[in-house]
Image 1 (cartoon, one colour):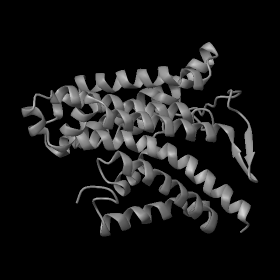
Image 2 (cartoon, rainbow, N blue to C red):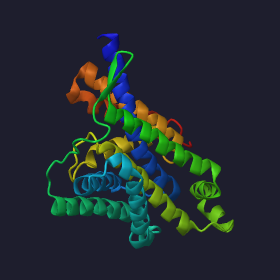
Image 3 (tube, rainbow, N blue to C red):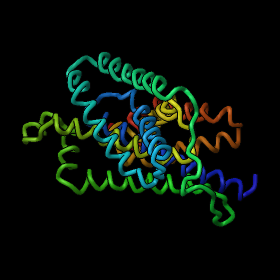
Image 4 (cartoon, rainbow, N blue to C red):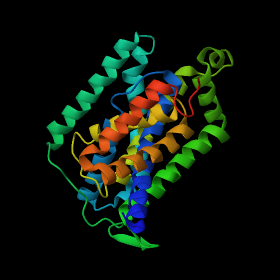
Length: 288
């Protein structure tokens, strides 16, 4: 193995890991605030990809220009979904919550297949097409832009949570719902906000991915399993943990594919997942 190949692999792992982190941040936020596991989270990513694709196909708008609109649409969709469905199961048994979000996953996937067919679609001729070379490492420009975009979106979420009153209220609700309610914080408003931000993060990841990844109804399944691994590794409810764990999972995945073969890369990631469950179930940065 040459140094250039190793650097190429590490760069690819970090860039795709940033996307995993962005997806996982939305997932861990919903769980941290409401303690509900959202199995439909991958479908938010899928909807973000289709939103970017159709705006590009119908109106010739590049995904990089429509990314803010995609984020806003997914935020509104997440809030609406909470108001219509999730609000009704907040106090339901955990099994009912799981079945509800799993049912939503199947519903959104089925609707996507019905309306858009199970065909693979791609966005050709995006403004970020091509590649760049840096220090002997060839990096696809779409992957590089997606990685930078994931960092920017993550930074915005981090700033919101740690530097705004609304973010502080959201964090307080995640820490202790009853105490937050006694302090005058509207828990329903915080729950809706968490779902909106979670869906927006997944939608942003979908918009960034749409420039180089195939778009099809089941695409969310490729990312939701890895998102659960990232959330478990970083610690349920930890945004910072999800960010670093996402990059770690991305690097481990590509290194496993390089050293053992592409067919084994998922096995390496899942082995890490099982090891964390066994020896540190709260995750690397989660609360014990």
